[in-house]
Each structure stands twice: as structure tokens, then as C-alpha cells.
Image (cartoon, rainbow, N blue to C red; front, top):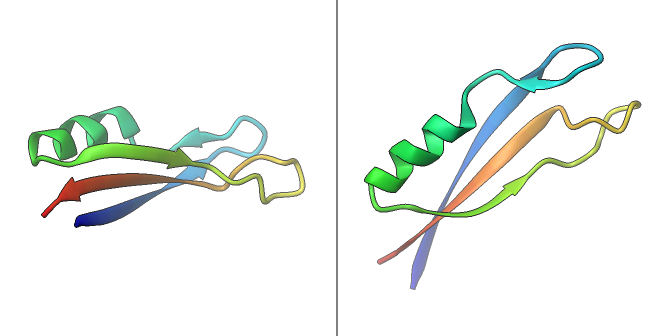
Length: 62
């Protein structure tokens, strides 16, 4: 059995989108808590095809 946690990071910028938070630091902190990075998901949903957010999906066994 696994548990999952999803953390959403909004993107900033008009043309060049960048994460508002340092996703690498979030991944390191969650790893210290026993979570494993499962996937980064960034759907292209805006007119330019750029993602407006990134979902970081973590997995942890119970």
C-alpha cells in the first residue's frame, strides 16, 4: 500500500515561465521525510503551450 502527496508549484513570468519556488529544495526536504519522487507533471495548458504550474508527485509506502 502506498500514499501519495502532490505539491503544486505555480509558474511565473509572461514569456519565459519559471517556477515560483525551488522545486529541487522541495524534493530534498520531502526525501528527508521518507517520500520518494514519483513524477513531475507540467501540462501545456496556456495559449503559448507553456505550463502554468508543475505538480510534484511523491510516493511513500505505508
